[in-house]
Amino acid sequence: VEETIQVGLGDRSYSITIGAGIMERIGPMLQAGGFAKRYGIISDDRVAALYGEQVQHSLRQAGIGCELIVFPQGEASKHLTTIGTLASSLAERGFDRGDGLLALGGGVTGDITGFLASIYMRGIPFVQVPTSLLAQVDSSVGGKTGVDIPQGKNLVGTFYQPRAVVIDTRVLHTLPHEEFLGGMAEVIKYGAAIDADFFTWLDMNQAAILALDAEVIVPMIRRCCEMKASVVEQDEREGGLRRILNFGHTIGH
Ligand code: GLY
Image (cartoon, rainbow, N blue to C red; front, side, top):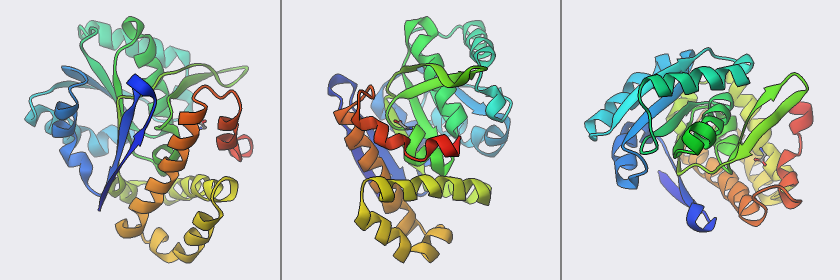
């Protein structure tokens, strides 16, 4: 099963591809996209240990240069100091405006990679390869980036769209169960806030969802991304409607 949906934002439009095992093909996919000549793969130490090699191998096989740049796992890394450290790593490796970033990880990784991409050399391309369910159904889509400061979450950031989102549902098998359930809260939220039929569908498919059956997980994530894309297309910078996506986030934070 593989599904593709489009986020329609004029010349900043991009595709979201969802499938089981598609991370193995990330190299050819990025080569076809032609977004950058070399990628800085930004990942935390846990996800880098699981998937860093595979992604680097796929990119190199496709003739795309890459460097894995790792930061410590956890919310504490969603901080301006991490942005400074990562920017220095890119500069030391000679990253320029022809290069891009690849966010390999959960929400923290996507948010800091997107923020860094939006400001490094005044903006370089980036792609999202989300590895948590929460990032797959929410944070990797729609271009919100940022970090926390002592005064509040996400107070410093940008709206900056990725060039592509590649969602491999197979990685959910290595996601801690608690994290999977946290992501499911967000999935159920789409049902509660936007689509009652989807809410019922989730209820009917509980066993298959919990078993991570790709036949159900791929369409589930596709439907969430479709809803998110539709809202973002109508209100990219959260003038009004996009606030519907924040339903449940205050208590979640
Ligand atoms: N995470 C909510 C939004 O992207 O608007």
